[in-house]
Amino acid sequence: MKSIHKILQSIVPILLVTVALISCQKKERPTMSAYPPDVTSPDGPLKFYVAFDGTSADPLRNAVDSVRANFPSENPLTSIDGVSGKAVKGENKKYIKYVKPNNWASQSQSFSISFWYRRDGQTKNNTGTNGPEYPISFQSSNGHWSGSNFFVILEGNNAGCAVKVMIADKAMADNWFTWEGGDVIPGMLDNQWHHITLVYNAATSGLTFYLDGKPDSRVRVWGTHGNINIDESAISEVKIGAGPGTNYDTDDWLSSTWKGDLDQFRMYNQALTAAEVTALFNSKL
Image (cartoon, rainbow, N blue to C red; front, side, top):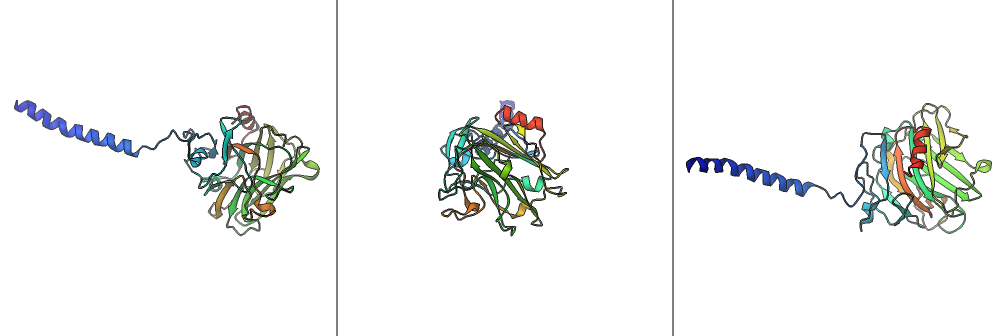
């Protein structure tokens, strides 16, 4: 009997510790089912990725960045069927807000930004007249006249759409990479899903525009600028579906919002190859 008592004395504390550890693990484990699982490495080239595939009643979970579980501070946009899984429907004067694009800016010398969009016809400003619309922008405190250090504009109609990308570096040197005037692109605003990838190569200071996996031969170059050198500390807000301005009730072109649909935002800290861009398009990623 004494030997049995000693065995019990040794086993019981172990059982209690085991139960306590299991209880702690259950309390600390986050619920993962409400947003897409983190299938990417935070140390890999993909620095920011929003698939919009969440099905939670909480819209913030439906727009979470799955690289670092970076939740938006606001998501007023409606979830719809996308090119792959779910997407979001753009709306006048509304957009999705994030504090930062993770460490994309601080880690990028070259970069690639990829997303799917669908837009039917003429782009409009917030008062309903013809004007630009922004799939993405960074609001910035860097002192640049635009209040931004990065944005992407689509402007026009299905007969011809201009694509404009503005980047301002830490020294507030800026550059516009544009396909406009005689270089506008037809067939972009036909109410069908299209895939855009913007690839900046620091080695050439050139930005290549890809539409539906195919590169435009007219590469735009920023002199001999080299590394993109964006000031990450100055980014005060990432806006998916709006320009960097805040005058939403006016026709201010910097404050215009996106009125189409958006899906699958990806931001890399490297220049993707043509084959990699094609693979994203073919896989609807």
